[in-house]
Image 1 (spheres, rainbow, N blue to C red):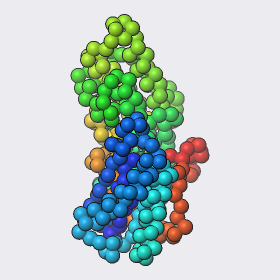
Image 2 (image 1 turned 45 degrees about the vertical axis):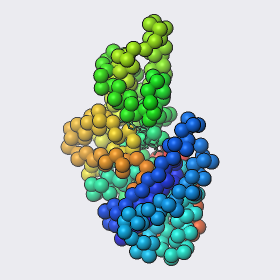
Image 3 (image 1 turned 135 degrees about the horizontal axis):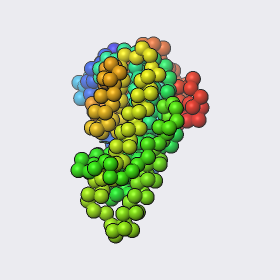
Length: 347
Ligand code: ATP
Ligand code: FE
């Protein structure tokens, strides 16, 4: 079937047209410039920008796909979790289109969109294991079906992308921090500075990253007081040590998650941090050690986009049918309602 997907839960406005597993178009309008002056995403500005840009994104997605609304079979929209103003803009737009055209409406969980992407790109069969690792999330999910997820563990504080961004800020490197820290680390020595490997001493797959930032701050301040400032080599060595700590923690926790997942068809990684070359390589090696196929979707599909929403919508539609016009926007919407940790978090 041909599905129009809409995404507006954070700071990207996106629309896409998907036919089967073929992406006919995928338009992403980011709001980075709008929020740059405020040092973070401003919810009110985001909501207004989504409302303004959705129309245009949809028009472009349809024209890029050389199709029109009348040829669309269903409309899928992110219904949460996320910034409520943005989610509402998308849900209202989708309801309007559905009411006007009579096409089925499908509410999609944003995280399900990320988690189903390896199936869209590589046709992975259920069940598979995925590590979602981004600026806002870090969790291991076993994906059993389009709306059935089991969470094996997640971060108890920061997400790794957030930690990369903070590290860059502390070292005077440009944002987003991931790529600039990775680049600086290329000429660094990862063993020069000691960084902790948080939570490795405890069983299970939960993770923690806030201690790394504290360690970095301490090392930096020590250098500044010893030598009056940071040399380029110091920055590279700090970046290399920090990146190695994130890599080691994610690899060891992935190792445990893989051991706890019988019968999976693959191990996938998604989210912006999955762009990290060293991390990707280490996770691939681990996966192959376990004799499990490794999937890392292309970056444009790892970060926020509407093709993943269209796909998750199509899968949900096939399994459970459509939603109706009572569909509501949810700021919090845990994917896994079985695991006790889901109670404490909407993400
Ligand atoms: P979410 O979608 O979970 O709400 P988000 O939109 O912030 O969060 P993404 O767009 O998936 O997340 O990813 C952005 C994050 O990925 C940023 O924190 C960025 O620093 C990080 N990142 C990007 N490239 C790299 C890289 N090469 N190495 C490490 N981190 C990276
Ligand atoms: Fe996302």
